[in-house]
Amino acid sequence: MKFNRDKTDIFYVDITVRCEKLEKGGIFLIKVSYSDLGSMFFSTVKPIQLEEVYDYISKNENIQEAVVLWTCNRFEIYFYPGSYDSVQFFDEFLKGKIYKYSVIHGEDAIRHLFIVSAGLDSMVLGENEILGQVKEAWMISQKKGYSGTNMNQVFRKAIEVGKKVRTLHGFNKIKRSVASEAIEFIDSKEEILIIGAGKLGTQIAKMLKEKGLNFSISNRTEIKGKNLAKELNVDFVDFDVKKWANFHTIIIAASSNGYLIKKEDIVKSKVQKIIDLSFPPSVDPELSNKVELVNMERLSSISEINNKRREALAREALKTVEEEYLKFITNLNEREKQKIIKKFVTYTDNILNEELEIFSKEIPREYMLEVEMGIKATRNKILGPLIQALKNTADIKSSSLLSELERLLDEQLSKSKVEKVKEVKGN
Figure (cartoon, rainbow, N blue to C red):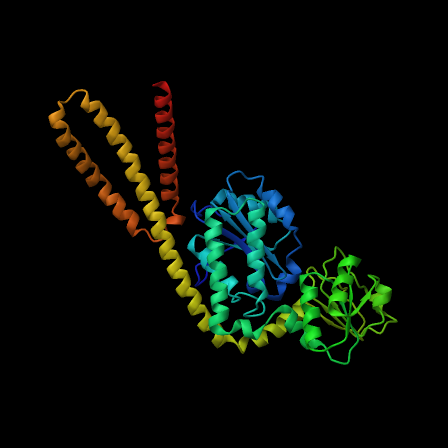
């Protein structure tokens, strides 16, 4: 297929076409987010269940590791090892669900994760929630058995980078989030109802409590809603649209398969403002003109204005991300290089020992030391350029040639171990 590259060297792929130039190996990332599509994200990305994604991944035996990061303004699948076939595999799953996505390969995928974790790729620049969401996505992957050596080291470092950026550049003091942007629309004199007692609903409720505002809570699962209401010493309202009609402002922080509030539900109500933070939307967009609707699309336009005010701070934060990324990649590549070099040496040592054992039966003992030294010197001359080439390789994790070479070395070393075990048992 034809690629379009931007200045960050990211591949943008339309799901109606195919890509045949991706190398094998390394971490791959398929993603679509608010930063890619802007407000179009909320109208072009259909809801996908997390379990549905992992169930689909389990059908591909070639994918050894995977982490799915799914929030209100991004959908990302990190997987290892990457390949063209794996991208095609996910392409089939995403048809009809996502208008377009981008594929990031190797070190660029790691860099992107660090930027995301730092809150620099979010709809609300510098938000704190994304750090917890990255950690939660990693933990879910671990529970499902999909986070191995590669994902563990990359996500662990991404969380460290996210924390460091917030500490050094004050993002943790700003406390910006989708929730904080939303409550800017609330007047202190309003009668407020929060629908939803999950993470977002709880966060909003605690923010309103800190501001000294009066509000009530409604939740589909009654016991959960009542517990939150009791904790914050506020009223609980039944999960009934007729009961909601008595409030001036409604904040929706709950997901739904359809609209929770329709036009006819509020015709004769007190409702004058609805803040819908759910994705997909839980409110019929065709509301009465008397009702102000603040949804994710409108909220995103406000966030863009606020983000411009913090661009200087974000640029400094990005420098920290880049520094941490370069240090991590350098160390990662050095470890990988030493690992492969060790496998080369072990593999050639096995061959040398086998040949020396054969020679020892035909050559007098007094000459064996010279033979051994000569063979090892020859081996070292042959391996020298290869080892030097390995040391000069920039992104060793994303090289299809090295991935295949390492696979063959592992295969040969495994055979050698099996043969030694058989030999011992035979004796």
